Each structure stands twice: as structure tokens, then as C-alpha cells.
Image (cartoon, rainbow, N blue to C red; front, side, top):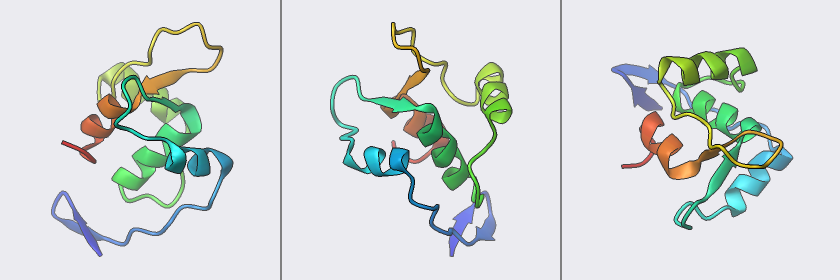
Length: 94
């Protein structure tokens, strides 16, 4: 059991996906570490005690509201976020 905002919640492990396996290999201490869309959706679900990743529309709303940092402007085709900023915004790292 874990406590989240004064509530008890059970944290259940998310199903293993390729992006989750890749994120386990990622070293967040590297300068400029990046996180992709499926991984950030799973991290937000973990931080809010949900069993499933959040939807893409919820992710966009959270970004617009400022609850998570804005995505990085990179020449990559898929959106990426700075790993350290995301973890700090979710309260998973100080």
C-alpha cells in the first residue's frame, strides 16, 4: 500500500511493454535524457495510482494546464519530454 494525497492506494504493476522495457534501460541521470509518449502516459498513471495509462487527450490537457512540462522542440517526429523535468513535476524525484 502507498499513500497518495492522504489516500491509501494499491500500486499494481503495469503490463510490460516495449516502451516500459526501454525506459528501464534509460539512465535518467544522463544529461538530456528523453522520455517518449507511451512512457510518460505510464508514469503519470503510476504517479496517480491508476491501473491503465492515461489517454492522449488527458496528456495534452495536462500539458496545456501546466501540470506537466511542455514537450521539447526537437527535429524528431515523435514528441519527447525531458525525463528529469517530468519526474520532478510528478513528484517521483526531487
